[in-house]
Image 1 (cartoon, rainbow, N blue to C red):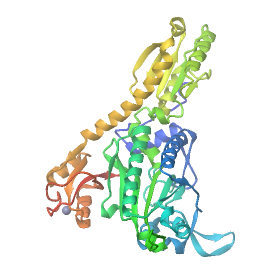
Image 2: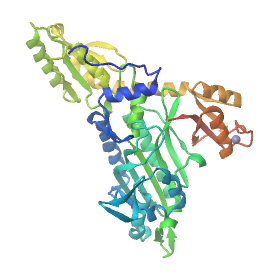
Image 3: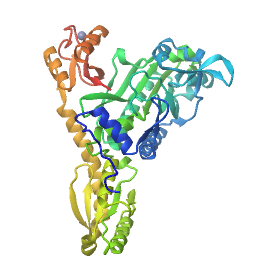
Image 4: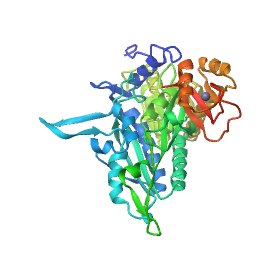
Length: 477
Ligand SMILES: [Zn+2]
């Protein structure tokens, strides 16, 4: 079978988008479907999503969030109830106009997000301050009919996500939750996907349609572009006023509720692949890898049985991890090495005749290619700590890259220079739309997010008027 398996034909640094598409297919993460922009998420990728789901679901339940499910279809009249919301989503809504052979009386939107269908119910459900805060989440798919060039995970027409929708008596309670959730999202990226994020507040131009304010985790990718990882919005009272979601306070007065919505999607899978992958393929962070350790026997005719028996013993010693014993005999060891490297399995354990004799195994890291020989009696414990080390070092490398590539621009000249080099540019900014347009036009970068903690010391880097925020700019995916 040697030579059948084709490697990746382009380098990550040379043609990023071609590289990305190739590794997704060759590492068996996605498949294309007959509908442009809609992708099959294959088991190796879906496993990552399951890890995110399990972790995040457990954390939000600790906060009192309950899971529910709302219908996929939203009547047009409901979608239109909050004017800014519908304006923001209208261009990418997919509509159902017909059932069988008959025209529907009212067309139905395939949910692009569920604020409107949920809040129609919330208005009937919520009565008293005693029920608040009220917290609902749903795990589901959404459809946004993108017209830009579709990209698997990053810009797909249908994707999976969770959407949390909560109702509060006060703005303080809503505000607090926005940032609690943002912190959880940061942990999904850092602790599971080994990715450092920039937490911040979106500018007025970039906030969610219908929100009072939006926060997000932004990820600076290794090739000088950034991407929004997830969002946590405070909706203020915009939707409660449009939908009539009120509660009676302790004095018996009717009050409009404060609301939040927040979501993380399968886009995070694409971000992880882009961040850690290399010229050999995917590099999976151990905590989300469908297989953490693959055991590959090196077989020769005379010693075949001994080596297979020994490798089986090695597999048993590693049962505390997600281990796979690759005992296929119609593929060479070299072919298997390439395959598991392509698929991003964090650790490969090789055993050959010499290892049987010496009661040892050769352990190879996917991320660095580093090889070490470990005696059999120490293997179980050392593999456990090696998996942790790989997880940590993937994060550390990404963090170092982020730090090295973040540039503060004190003048417009510095801004242009940093932007042309693909840096993540930090600058004092006025937050005006017209100024933003100029920045986009001149540098191709846009405001990703506003710093949550820093205060501007100088005037706006572009127009020179008083600065309101310290902002991050980059090209965005
Ligand atoms: Zn300005």
